[in-house]
Image (cartoon, rainbow, N blue to C red; front, side, top):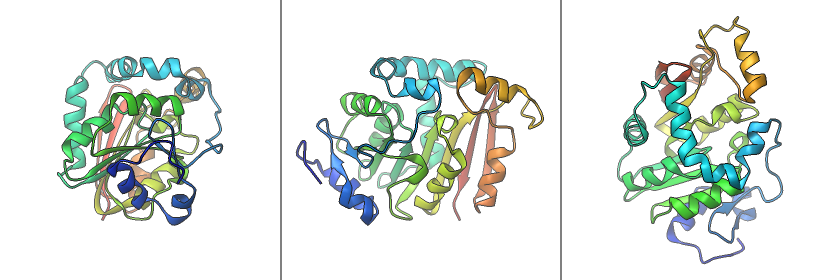
Length: 255
């Protein structure tokens, strides 16, 4: 590891979670996040993905993300603080938990999780350098670490996490079901997974509105059973789906 800054204990603990191949190539950035991608970021295929990797959007994300989620869910969802409390409860976070926040953006949830795992570790993972710079600046702490990585090929060893979240990011991943498989791989038995993502209007796989929305927004719109069926095929149990407007949350436990 090349040290741009002196590694904090959280960074050292993050290093211990990585698979051997990724540990050998990881580099600590000048602002303090661990980089396992260097010049191998996932390809950008939509305008929305491109926006996520800009400094302008990363600066506005803390305002736009909670507002967008509340609008998408019909203004019935809890506000920003309520979101965090509810997700942490679904993840069943304990003081010594290791939680991975995939597609963390500027660390809105990661930073809050860090406060709930006083003896554990909250790791935010994202492919966007501007987002991670914002995360380190705004949402850091002694139990928080950030990593630049690919959700479709997570750099972690098998079974290292007690909980995994992917909140308002799955619809931007090029191969979302590969990403879900990776989240399953890195979870310990008994670990909890929470996915917050889109739901096409009406939820019907035969409804063409999902394709139309995807063309306009640059995001994938999942039909009602698409994610829950896949999570079940992976062997997860206690699968719960909560639907509000055109947003869905899937909560599941790895046996």
